[in-house]
Picture 1 (cartoon, rainbow, N blue to C red):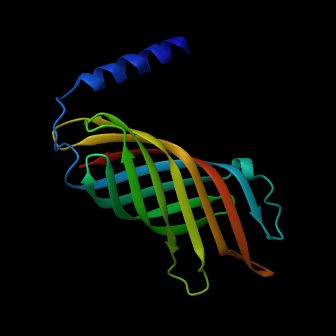
Picture 2: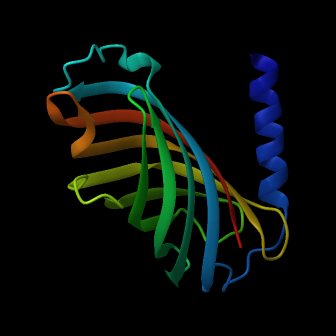
Picture 3: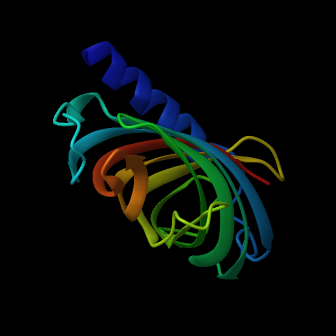
Length: 185
């Protein structure tokens, strides 16, 4: 464990020294691609099935977004993705707004993020879906135009009509820890 902490500290120190601070480093249009994994914290539903095994619930996601740096410390954008929920299983397609606040104007910096949106449905019956993600991340410079991001935080998902059982449509509320890796270009 100590070796891992030392390795992370050395890598982080190396990334802090890469590249000079550019006054206009964060003032531009950006695009991102992210993959994430979320593990369940809690799950509630009115399903007649035994879904109390929420600790085995997880989500896999692929999301893309585009946005703008309003100043070197704040950006906002819109995104779309595909989320796969397990236990119970379902696919959703989130459409969201992404807000980020950066600690400093540097290619290697910490940031806070807040995403809020709705899951788009392609079935008329499945509606009223809300999602929220919030947490902290770090951006690493890989090249002049490419950044690697790592994020961790809280994820909330609520759907009034999540899956259909013999008794009709069932709601679901899921609280999760989400871990994300992405590329910003």
